[in-house]
Image 1 (cartoon, chains in turn cyan, purple):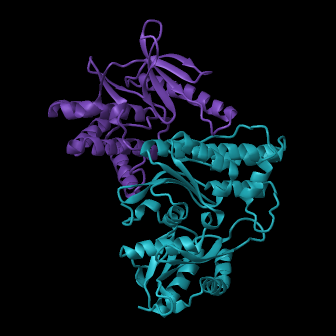
Image 2 (cartoon, one colour):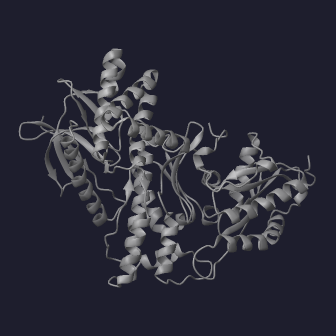
Image 3 (tube, rainbow over the protein chains, first blue to last red):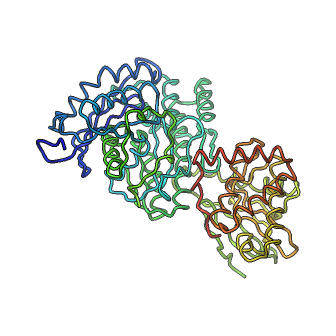
Length: 340
Length: 219
């Protein structure tokens, strides 16, 4: 064993599925020692995968260094390296994977590939104390309602096209909304929506348990371009419609599974209106409402590190030759031996 | 019976047995959702209260027995429809003889085939949503998750739920039942379409999706 100074076991996790490059360090008991996040901010437009990957490569060594400083450990104190193996943007994933492979082979310690969506759920459980929740995970890249059943996190409902966060982002950009530094577009839409009063009808598309946002987005942009409505009212209507959709699906999952907790996570979890809707259904079904603090709700390395610990303890190790990234790795493809 | 009797409380609507003009009927009431703006809530309930009876009626036109709609009260989001007296196929499958079971499954396959042929997707094909009445007719109920579509994906998802219901509630003869359902289905839609839908189901299974999409509930 390589533990020299502290006698503790540490896992370092690298997250690079999209616009954030992040390194987290978790002790084997779940104590998070570091969680450093560096966001790539495009000069204009959305995330360009190659540009984001270039950002990740540029900041990688600095973010690693900061994480070691924060955790007050040295690379030799690590027992395992975890990295997000998918799903996500190819160039971004590959950059993180390359850093992870290099570290693991240099230190001669095991590598563990982690599913990004599983990691969001696991850090959610760790940080909120939830045991067995229905999880609503809403971000710029994912919109998934899931719950554990027979060995895996099953997807009860999901988006059929764009993610909810992406829908808000694109609308905000089309509207020419201005972001403060570090402020996500979702927060800008939330600010405008707070002053909206009039509900403008938009397509409400729930198909069984799945949702579709693309038609709604097009309709909202069309209305925007016509210029007949106040921007505040459009933001308000957009929010009310998309949040009602995800809440409805979450409620169905809750009613069917009869679970006693609802976990809200992902970047969009920070939205107060969404929180209030999900809290309302949790109360109605006598379930506990758990919402993630922003630092751990957005993409972060700590969740990868912690999930790496769980997987490693159950014998999951990823040999270098099998550590290729999986762009479309679905949540329910992953066996979860640590949940009974 | 003076007061409507609650017989099922779902995530979206409640079902009551009620007395309506000296007739025992089913009353389906969509409940207000507090998390939604009342305006939006109203629009959604209205749309669904109108849409579901339309599908039920169209299904009947394709030759699939469904409850007769007596009244649609859009303002109160209530549908009043015929009460189908009979037994849920869910119960029957484990009680009846093998030949009767095969007859039922073949018939169910034909009925699903007819819906799909005319572009109706039921959306919740569980054996608890099928009722055999005293005349031997199988009725399909609850089109609340239904839609109009002729796409292979929608048909596959529809039948996949049927398959999964059989596997979880009737596991002893799930295989036999499902292949008989498919026989009935291909009699209506033709062997080629049936094969395409079966391939689609296999693809859906490989995706791992929908595996626990809906717990087969005890209705």
